[in-house]
Length: 174
Image (cartoon, helix red, strand yellow):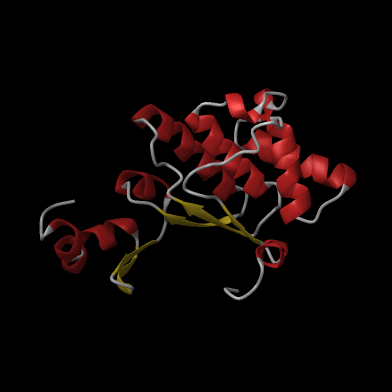
């Protein structure tokens, strides 16, 4: 899929978020999600509106549907970024360090949101450096270093790997 243009990848069922959320600030939260449904998802009319609203409900943003995106705090910008990707109804969702910059209480909210997304049947591939978040949600963890897989399996097994410990902690305890 690497050579395909983003709209075609999206229509094939691959959604993604960006590390730094950049909502369309002059639009409302709902309008931002609607852009995801229409532009990336190829949906139209009431189908696009329904997908946008469902994505907002799933991410806990429905109550802010009429709020200007530019006025959102960081956690809500990240949840809107997630909703915009979900509005296109992907089968696989790529999360790029979505927890970056959030406080511990905010990450707890985000964890519950991601659990809900996954429970709805969306496969999630999550690149993250905050290990606590990955282990709270993941059923499978793949640890990469220098372009190769160091370990792949259940989170506890991967984190117990001597090779993972050596690569990331100099042999210390995770």
